[in-house]
Amino acid sequence: MLGLLRRITDIAPVFPGDNGFPNATVVVTGYYPIFSLLSSPLPLIAWLVALEISIPTTLLTGPTSPLIAPPLIVRLAQLSEIFAETAMLSLREAVNTVNNELEQRGQLRRVGYAHVPFGPENCLFAPASWLFGLTKIKGAVRITLDELERDVKKIPEAREIITYCT
Image (tube, rainbow, N blue to C red; front, side, top):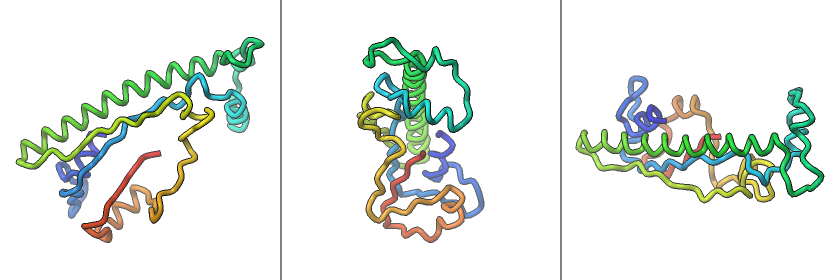
């Protein structure tokens, strides 16, 4: 993330003529846990079967109560939380580092960190999942990093740009 922020803010161009976006205000959103205790095991099982991944049935079935998550969901939720917390700390550190580097170059701090209020109900296979079902922003164009590198000069300077990684 640090390298990407440096590139976007023009601290570390990657190729000749790469000027990044020297006037852009950049907002970095935090990561989120992919699984939670509210994640349903049924779509997970179907996904694992489709990927031909074999999981011991003892990890896929919980006690007789449907309110208690199977051991696999519990472990995935724990690991997802650890990942999200660790990633958020790293993202905040990258934002602070780039802002300090901008200040050292006599520029304004223009990279911010935004915490997304992502709850257990928003995780993958949960009741109100925000993952892999994002609605498209009106007028948005989805491009790959390769397309951005190729066509960066075509983006009007006054155009608002919103990016996210999936």
